[in-house]
Image (tube, rainbow, N blue to C red; front, side, top):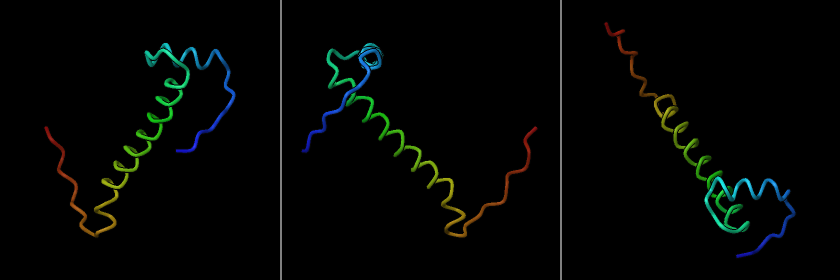
Length: 67
């Protein structure tokens, strides 16, 4: 796997280390990036599930109000 070197504000990295509970900057940044990617995948899955009836033409009538 290719490696990328970047410069980050030390205060940001320390804050991420504390929030993520990790002991080194490398792990902290990797945790943030992995979380960001996972969140994007969850959002994509939610949108796809919500849009599925529109895409397939299988629209369900709305349920009547309860109560």
